[in-house]
Image (cartoon, rainbow, N blue to C red; front, side, top):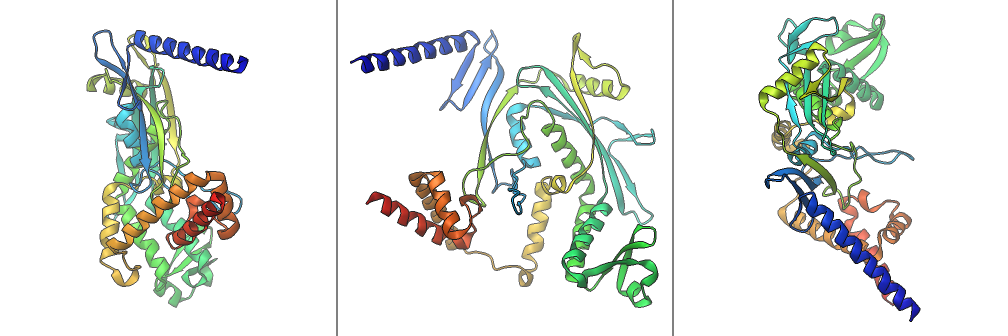
Length: 395
């Protein structure tokens, strides 16, 4: 009897706590929409002041990306530029492009600033963006991000990787060791004094590296702007993370993130004035309130280039793939895709039935892998192992 009384008292306390929370939400003009995934904070007049929403980022839609781990280092899943743009649909952070920017030597140039060689090929792009919006607590926060994007740097880095993996692609050498045939059939890139990298034009991997370089030059300005916009958002106080831990099976994993958004009560003119205060180096204020500000000179890393591919680049790559069927794997039929969808659903049901830890133990023991790293050819075997374990547990 005493246990039953204790349980009843505990439930009554929970009910009272819930009543108190609901009353506090009512006093702060907070409304709940739908299934409780979205909360609204309203002004006294009934207008929407703030929104708390749950945003689902999808691997299939290129909103998250897997950077594969190796050895004891686990895989990472950064949020892509498309992912931050989706989150920003709730957060409502404004991105402003100032009219000018200052180069390293102090020269003031138009923003963005494009540098070309004598053949009109893009050598580099300087671009600067400022993100302006409210943090989850409602305070205005600003981030200014400036970077230089140089496609040529990534060509050399890519070629070094190709040569490292395939000695037929080229070699590290002294320029004095090269013959006339070497110069006729390849190209030398100086790295340090007379030392550098010679690459073979006849090698397919070298051709791919130059193809990527051509693509990067074609989209250099857009890629630079996409990278800097992503940096502006990921460093803003409205966004709490750069990486996620998705659920589900590749390539259809997803992750849910809570995002707080505030109505933007700043006009275009006010946003530009704030950006101009940054240019002048003044203390940034609005209505007498000091604004939190972060200045960043960004270095473009491999991860930034990977996760900042925009939709048009993806389309071009898909068109190129379709135009070269002899060099690409055969496309899966519609029936194959449907079969994989069904397998994924059944595997997810089996994992839910067994529990994540038990399912992980079975796959690690029998297949030396985990649920999130299953490849399509492994789906049937994984489902069979999990189903057999469910059958044994039922007995």
